[in-house]
Length: 326
Ligand SMILES: C[S+](C)CC[C@H](N)C(=O)O
Ligand SMILES: N[C@@H](CCS)C(=O)O
Ligand SMILES: [Zn+2]
Image 1 (cartoon, helix red, strand yellow):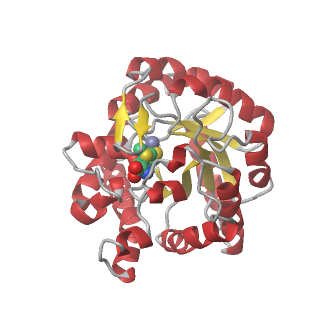
Image 2 (cartoon, helix red, strand yellow):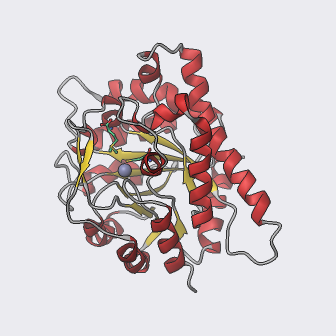
C-alpha cells in the first residue's frame, strides 16, 4: 500500500470519528502504574527487553478507553541504546520490530473482539510507530531544551535516525509518529530522511514547547514548520508532551502556519526533571479538564487529540467521550 492509500486510511478514520480522532495517552505512565521500573537510560523501551506482555496489556487498555490510534513502545528504543546494554545489532533491530508487532497484535485482538459486538462505538485503530527525538535517546532531558551542542549537525541527526526508521518502516505500522522534537534542525533531518528513504507511510511530527510560544530551541514555529509544509510525507504537525494550558493558543498559531492536519497530545502539566528522572508537580490538568478542553481543541482545528506523559486510559476515556458525543 503506497503513501496515498495509507494517508486515505487515516483520513477515513478521522471522518469516521466525526472530524477528530483520538490518540492514546501516556504509554510510560501506564507501564509505571502497573509497577514497571523505567528509571533507566532506555526509559519506557526497557519494557521491550523486560516485559513485552505488559506492553501489549497497556495497548489493550488504551484501545478499550477509546483510542483510535495507538503509539508503539519505541520512543526511547534505539539501536545504539540497546547495544550499549550488551545486545547485538540484530537483537536490537528485532526489538524495534517487536514494538510494532505488539501494537498490531493488540489492535487486531481488540478489533476481533469488538467487531463481533453488534453495537459498539469503536473504530478499527491504527498503529503509529513512535520515533523519539535524539534528545530522548540522550536521556538527559534535552528533548525539552533543544540544546544538542555544537557538534550535532543535520548529517549527525540523519545518521542517528536512519536505521531505526528503516527497521520500523519494514515492520509495517500504519503511521510514523516523530515525538518531542525540540528544534528545526531535527525536524528537517526527519523530513529529509523520509524522502531519501522513499518512505510510503504517512508521518506526523510533534514538537515540544516549554514557553507555549516557541520550540524549546527558541526557534519560532514558523521557522520549524517551513521544511515540513513542503513535504508530502508529512500528514500532520503539532505538539506533544507540553503542558495542556499551552495547547489552545498553539493550535491557533499552527492553524495560521500550516495546511497540514494538526495533532496535539499534551502531558498533564507536570514538569520533567531530566537529572532526577522524575516528574515534578506543577499546574496540572485532570481528566475532567481534558474532557472540557478536547472539544475546544477540535473546534480550533485539531484533527488528532490525545494525551502524553502522566495521562492515563481514564484521560483517554474522557477525551473520547467528549469528542464522540455527536
Ligand atoms: C518524555 S521524557 C519524560 C522521556 C525520558 C527522558 N528522555 C529521559 O530518559 O530522561
Ligand atoms: N510515547 C512516549 C512518550 C513521549 S514523550 C512513551 O510514553 O513512551
Ligand atoms: Zn510525553
